Every structure is written in C-alpha cells, then in structure tokens.
Length: 239
Image (cartoon, rainbow, N blue to C red; front, top):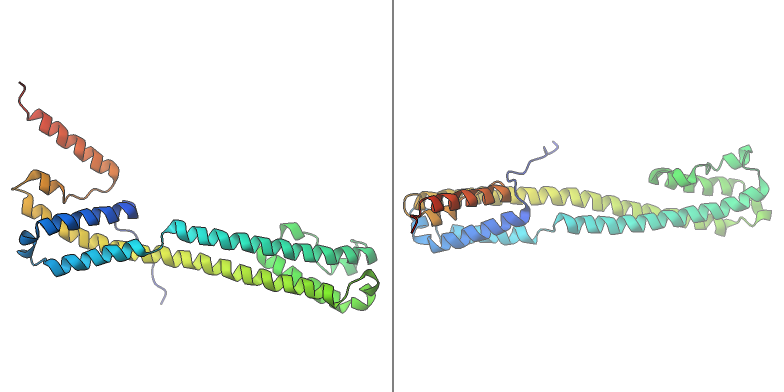
C-alpha cells in the first residue's frame, strides 16, 4: 500500500525548530531536578539532544536542489550533444533527399528543437535505425556506421544523464519526506518538554516560564515579546 503523504506539524523553519529545541534542552538541563519529578530524566534529555543532532545532519532542500540542478545541467548538455549528432547526420541526408520527401520525413526530425526529453531520445534512436536501413542509398553522402554509432552513443549518454536527473528528483522527494518525519518527531518531543517546563514555572518565575513557550512563527514571538514589555512597563511605577 502506498504511504499517504504527511504534513508538517510545525509552522516555523527547520532552522528555527532546531534552535528552539536546542534552547529548550539547555533550559531543561538547568531545571533537571524539577523535570525528574515528572519522569523526564537525563537519559530522555540526551535522547532528545541526539534527535536534534540527527535532524541537523539531514541534507537540506537547498543541498538537494543544488544536486538536482547540477544533474539537470549535465542532462541538458548531453541533450545538446545528441541534437548535434542528429543534425550532422541529417545534413548529409539532406544532400540526398529533399526535406519534403518521404525518405527524409521518415527520420522524424522536423521539430528537433522543440522535443521533450523522451521525444528526443526516441528520435535519436529512430534516426540511427532509419539511417542504417538506408545506408546503401546514403553511402555517397559520407554516412557510415561511424556516423550512426555517434548518434547511438549520444543517445546512450543522454539516457544515462536523464536517468540520473530523475533519480535526483526522487532523492529530493524522499529527502523532503525524511526531514518532515524527523521534524515532526522532534516537534512532538519539544511540545512534551515545553509543557513540563511551563508547568514547573507557571507560578514561580514568569521569565523562565516564557523560555518554554512555543510560538507558531517569529512574528508571534515578537508580538508576545512586545505585549510582555507593555505589561512590564505598565506595572512599573513612575518616579
């Protein structure tokens, strides 16, 4: 059964999630004596830190996109080389047959510049096959097995580059899913730790309580900070 696509449980960036977790872990180390009373001991805190380190080591989307772009550039270059090999052969074919004749049309190269990758690969192999079938008629134009093999070699190189590019596309999809799953597990553990921290300090220390508060975005965090400063300013007696 195909796995159903998941969704991110957090609305902050992956970098912000990592930093938030790291700060929460440091606060929990400070408050470890209290956390132990909730059954959240040092071993679980170390496991949480290990999850953070593992999350940070997962390749990011920029890295995967960069790999994908490099492979796409190589694929495009291989495609241009295949077009060059096809055009070189077709230049010789045009010396023998007018481009409106059936023998020329059999090669199927009329829209070479507009072909998709699969169409280009299909076209290259068709050109080699048709040229080989007519090689006796085209020999006086210089078309021989070397010319045909050049097209076939270019087809093979292009197909290989195309397959590698497609693999990188799949790698990116897998990477996105892997980071999302790891991020969700990290966020779930962060919520547990934050809820304990808030319960510890809710009636003891407002500053330490706020250290365990989670915000959906940086904007929410800045808004909460402004509100807190307003409250503190309102409570300060004027001199």
